[in-house]
Length: 637
Image (cartoon, one colour):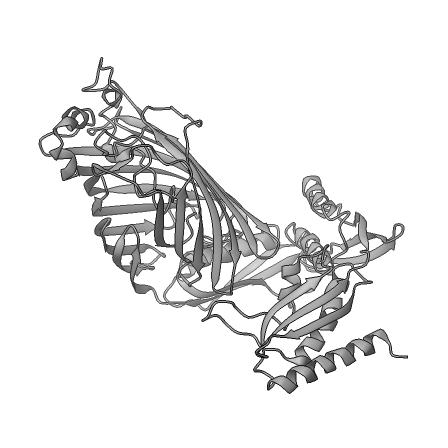
């Protein structure tokens, strides 16, 4: 009698003969692959482990072709995939290879019997008493999270590496961790992590090689450890990130001397670098539904006057903003964790409601304790001049409103000096700046103008923002953002005292361009830019002093380069300070597409309003459209 495996082999060969008789091998496209019986593992991960894959449904997407040898190997690979994830009895029971009528595409169905997995009953740590109690408990808690799950060999190896790195982060560079299993009942196993810490060690001599124009001292001051410190693999990795952050090196490697004896209490370290170009010119052009055509050119010198000092010059033009900026940064200010930056600009902003000319600068003291945590203090002093749109000036009924907003009712102009200080703190654990899949980010900013500072305005404003990215399976990401802020004037309304009109309560010592305007590609995507929030009867957005908005997206890939999203946005802006009216929010939903590029995803979103704004006017004309299309670069958040 044939064995089950032999029978499957005959079926594979028979299917290949049928396919080959109809078409030449390599001409038959794989239209789809379906699995029946997959319930306890990630089906996407299983598909990703196979050579036989379905092609893209997009006409220009990559096509995949049936290969009988690869398919036969994949049947074995499916069983191995399950075995590695704790399913020793999993097997392929049958499959079907079906050609279409044109005999140029094939649909594959694989039937799988998963069986019962072997689950993890308990995790024991032995020999880890050398760790501080807090860290040992944190390691135990992280391993206990695996209890009750199938014994996935990949996860177990990662857990072993985590335990080993914990020892190496606490002064034991030659530590070793072995794994053993014990029965704990029917289809139950206990895992025992046995540690051999070895000798407690400290950093020895630090040798630096490969540098040319960048000084030895510049490299050493970026290291987060020094000779004599307790050995820590974590600090070596942090130092490597710090050196890459200077943008001076194409290659950085920080590693211990592997030739040192395993019983040595001193571990020398070698830092190897390869310098890159220190002066770079970047140029970019693009198009967005809001900015329209845009162009940008930037020149950077990453070792200006030595010491990794950075000097940059930038010019930009688009329909929304244009101008020139210059920036200088001292990366090592008093200590490696502090940097001091100066920025000057001559800039123009052209918004749907107003235009703004800015001339001035900012100085910022930044403390970057590690890649995740930072805080900064900054001082800005800028001369600013703004104008409202000509349509608003032509409507005489707006005269009182313009005065309340601090604008000249004859020409809509306001000139003033904005002098402010700001404090900002942030924490970011997201795995990517351009296209995050996991982690979170939080930031808070408080700024004050006027009071003890010179200038034409007097207010203070707190703002908070949070983002959270949750991976679902191997490919899907659930992304979320929430943002809130308010502006409160310091002092009394210069022109609106005693008025009963809501516009009269707007305090003119808050700059018009500082108010909150929602709507657009980075905000509520069902509306156009600045269309959500307080408006005049004419339809002129006058901005709010309080704002709340949030967004949620489900992101999932369609091909290697193309991804889709489904999103929900909510939010609003209100006229008065601290007036968070969460019962009065605007909502929109819609789909979007992303095309992945090295500089971030190219993005198109179509937003549909769920509760349109009654009698919405744009530049005095009734707005009947309840949807918007936005083109841009980068994720919405």
